[in-house]
Length: 440
Image (cartoon, rainbow, N blue to C red):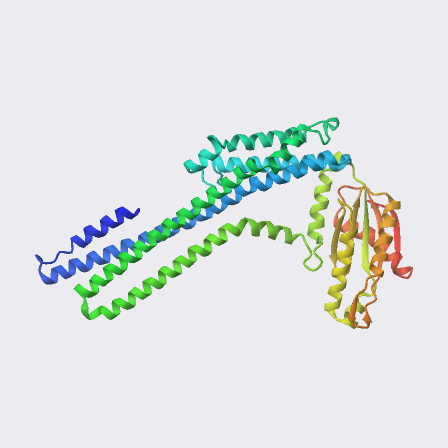
């Protein structure tokens, strides 16, 4: 219900309350029932408006997040384009090509959702004339620009190896658009438009709420002054209760709006944290299983030849017993830092549990893997951790290496194979590296 119709209903109802030509008792009854009817109508209107606004705000948040993804997606596509033409590793190029095509599909899905609506994403098919002008009319023609950007990204992903290089025209176009002011400004304008429309709808809701509150207060005052003077105090208490209810509803609208705007970000963050060990911030077992499943899919194209390295801290229980679990946690964090800082691009480190870490080295020779493991061992052994000013914590690790050639290897298979090599290091006196030739 818009503002003007609500004002007309209020004026007509107040006009109907002319009591001079009616009997006193009947006039009071008519006035009372009319006032109650108006209050019921206003309360119902409040409920309907709030429900609709909550739905609109959730939809608006999704549209803002989706339009924002077009901007971040273009930046990521441009970065992937640079990586594709600068890397000389064929396996990495295959992976980057796939990432570019995946980013193209995501941006295309986001654009189509904004233009045509998407039930699963909660984005309605309707959009405002201003959004339509940004997409389809001069001077922006954003739909054309996005389609052109996606076409250039797709063409780059399918370019021949001989065509890849700093002078590639598709790459130059992507870099120019993603770093230029015009394309990004147009995408920012789209995001701002969705934000402005959401804020405008919220402002209209607040206007309706103010009018409803004003109408309710006015009717209650009229009832108190001209109908039930003995009940003025009671009516005043009811007004306070209604005002408190309206404040609570406004707070609920604000909270739901904030939740809707943060939902996509929280979802992505929760998915990322579900794959990480919270203490060391490296992958957990679930994250490792996800990586292995992903690598198994691409094994037929790029080949599969890994070396798995199991790192187990020596005498870690003694560290916890002698120095406390807080120091033990600090040791684990430091070992995780050493492992992460030693990784190449594409290497993977996982905390299996307790004081065990598993490092996966793709496309790695056994000679390099042994040298890498020795570097890790020395780095851990030289770690300077003090429980107090003069009380250094002794830290060392035993390591087991094994070559992995089966793309369908499971986490349990990896641990079983690497534990055999690790036990050799433990039995040989700890703080050393042992190597197994191969594992299934």
